[in-house]
Image (cartoon, rainbow, N blue to C red; front, side, top):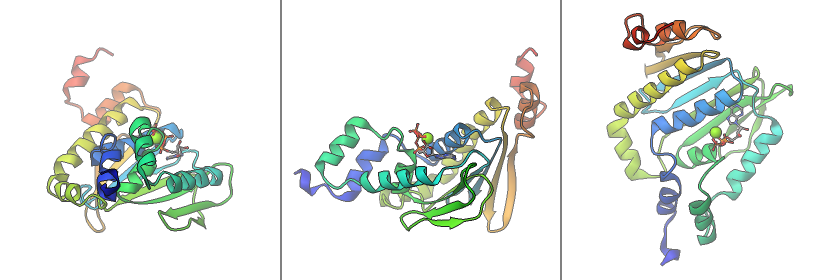
Length: 226
Ligand SMILES: Nc1ncnc2c1ncn2[C@@H]1O[C@H](COP(=O)(O)OP(=O)(O)OP(=O)(O)O)[C@@H](O)[C@H]1O
Ligand SMILES: [Mg+2]
């Protein structure tokens, strides 16, 4: 009986196809930061992603109007009945990455749009507040998969594998996007931050970028003719 579907199985069905892992969360946020014309993207992992991560960019930011749309979508996209579930299954979550991540974890967004004076902070699902910030966006993701207890347990066991996948994806993005400076940190313990990847400044040539990201002695560099 459809009516007996509980919230957890609905969430599971609706989000599992798009957002499977820590790496896919990271990928979605990085793509958003790249789309926002950032020239610098910083990623902080907390305990190899086990306690979450944050992505900080200096892109154009999310306008207050856009924030309200995000909030409304979040409000209406909550799956309340079978019609909603059917909609999600047929249309998927395109353009809903942030919402999906917010249904699977705790998300805090801080952003300031380039054309606005003040920024805002939104600790979903609380009300957003006004806040000072330089132009750009920070998104913090914590308590990953807390709405899906079984998956949360799995994640707590496998987080190091997932973390490595996330780093591999970030490495690829850092090589391709030579116009963006990437810095990736891992905070294994509180206030003990280690630099994991430093792409060097933006606007480098590909050779310089590969050297910075993968090191001097890497195979790719030697196979490529410059
Ligand atoms: N870092 C960011 N900087 C500026 N705007 C952002 C950022 N992250 C999200 N946004 C805004 O929030 C919207 C929603 O992001 P989300 O990832 O959920 O969907 P999308 O990027 O539009 O579509 P999809 O990711 O499914 O291709 C974006 O369209 C963009 O306007
Ligand atoms: Mg997106």
